[in-house]
Image (cartoon, rainbow, N blue to C red; front, side):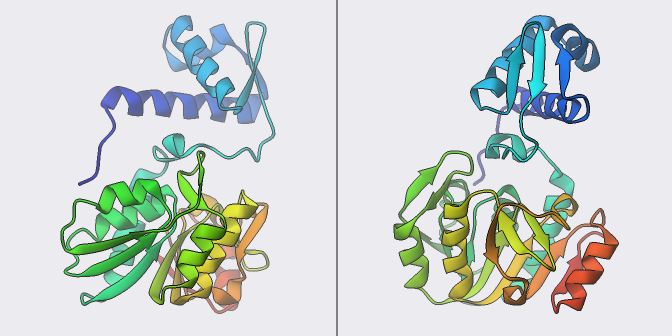
Length: 264
């Protein structure tokens, strides 16, 4: 059973995302102005800024905050509040692509892949191989599932196990389907993520799967992150939502990817 965050925690996460969005447009802002925009007290904003600064997502200034480099990776606790409806629709579409029989599936980390894990809850018999602590926790209560967790070093930003141990685990198992979350996908650059070690680990998953399904909300389509996980020729299916850029989707189709737009 999925563990739900308390409502207050979700509200605070949404507020911190709003702060990051303001800083993406403005680069810097005064604390008092943020408080007015968010309709909360200055003390509340000050606490939020302190936490964002601790995570190196912003830089505190005298009386406010300024942005850091725009490619900074959001921690999974904040990403989980973004595009929830789109991720649910994507997950439901992926669940329809998984045969309802004995089946082995790999799930990478990421909040969209976690939504897929939730959508598979009524599957009669799955073996799930994952390097994601979040997904492992989500599916551990399903008695009909066999769960295999890889070893590896923990990335705190994504709560994924990465490195040689995780790569070795994926390499030792034959997978029917790999469901791969991503920070960006383009026809030219393939599937990409922010961290090179995570990219190598997920590439091991891709290499040992008969079919690769990439799950990505529209904000990731046409976007290129630092490290390549897979070339576009290794991707069989992309499942996204109607907000995805049509031109980028056309390029992906032309490259041989089956594109499914969930909720359209």
